[in-house]
Length: 323
Image (cartoon, rainbow, N blue to C red; front, side, top):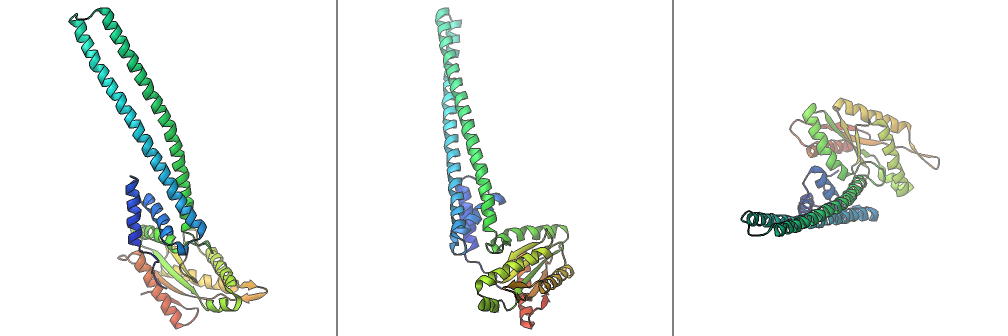
């Protein structure tokens, strides 16, 4: 029941911003979050699977390749256009000289026509080269655009993987960080009704000791499914710790949250987990806190966590409301 994190979030944020700057990408919330999540995975490998690590690295490598390709292509196109511009400027100067010589009758009409024909051929050739370069660049840019689109899809999938608890499919703490800020801002902008409820399974260690950790994992999945059945689509379920879950209830006050917790207790009592024809009863303690006008998401969770601690101290199956 702590809010500690395995890595320094300030350091992760600094690296993410540096990566954005190196690639000349705008520091939008979407770009920042994508880099932050990927770098966090790499900086905290002990909490991620090998496949999650591989996905994070692959996304960064793809993004490196795409941005480098776009940079080289743009540089080449600009150089070509600059060279063509110099040719045009030179021929315009030559045209002015030919015209002055023609007016002063310093050259014959034949020489003037020959000079004009030569300049026209050069202009046509240069225009053709510019057109060819732009057309080739357009095709290359379309390819890069498609690559970036695929990268965006990979990032979206990567973000979903990173923000999802591998065992239960609920949101994890990393996913909560991104969502909590948004929900707090939304609640403070509209009506201020946002409630957090943290539940902790009672005597869960006894289940692991008696039935093994594999059965304990199945019990956690069972609790996740029961909780999702009770919650609305707008509510959020987070695996907050080993046997702790956070219910983030939008547009809900203390009274509504208490109703949800009571209903979940009733459903859990009526729906035990069955292992080899043995009933494994699921009971939990809960702490509830409603968002205050002057607090942020972290403060909200801290008060809910403190209420949960009081509930655990007062006996199993209890619910406490934060001050």
